[in-house]
Length: 375
Image (tube, rainbow, N blue to C red; front, side, top):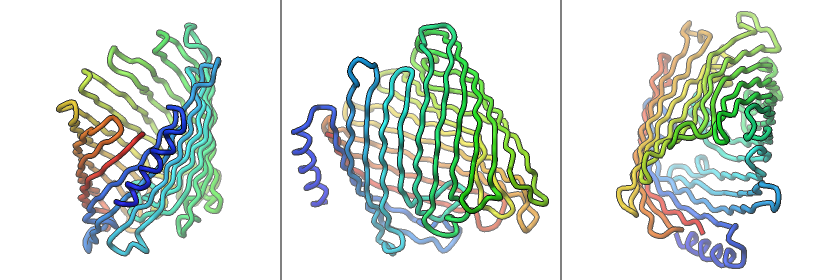
């Protein structure tokens, strides 16, 4: 804690020398986890100290309507249970130029948490994602747009280094019907290529057709919602496997602010997810989460997250069963705003995975307290 306070003082001094568009963040989260390896039986517990520090720069580009922002964030998670094995560093960086009709940037993540909900083991990895989107003016009734990104996942440890290191390229076009300057309906086509560095049996090409709406959806509702039809063609035929699959999916990210004291966020997605589970190259991943917060007073805010995820596998495992998992998450939290720049709070998270295959169930209880400064 002394180191955290010293770091906060140093960053505050540096911030005083810059304009108001530079902000620093430091945070400390002290938590307890009763099942750090997410096992069904023989659980190991640990206290965890998560320390983070970062900086954000934001500045309008004169005469362009664009805003330049850059963020760098790093931290360390220390465990009382075998920290040499469990402790890990993490980092995030992003550079972004964004306006009403243009968004271009690059984000980088280094972490050791779980790669996806299929896994329980932590996987040391990095991801770099370059992204671009542009569209014509929203002032006209009809418009066109383009979207593209190049995402590279690199895993540092085996077996994930072989199984999951891959590059994914998406490129698409959009046609908009601008209902208003703040609301657009659209159709979209996106081509996808996934190329593995080593596990080339999982290489694939795909197409996604989408119909959706974005922007201000109602007087107090904003976000995006779309329905997807996804097709995947695998480049390498494997005996007993289908080389073509399709999926009816969706993507939702909507925020509702019924009053100045309340926020409700609905998020969801149904998509293909890469898999390393026996005999499967993918699973159909269906997610939905609901978050709500309420300002109890000017200082206190209470929040609650409810989430559900289903993982549905196409092929039978070696025991002749098609795996199907259900995950449930409940996370209440309470925050207190001491000052505009200083907050603290407490949280609890319960998560359970129910599977129809042996060895994939688990229950997890976590809880902690945090303090965060942004200045």
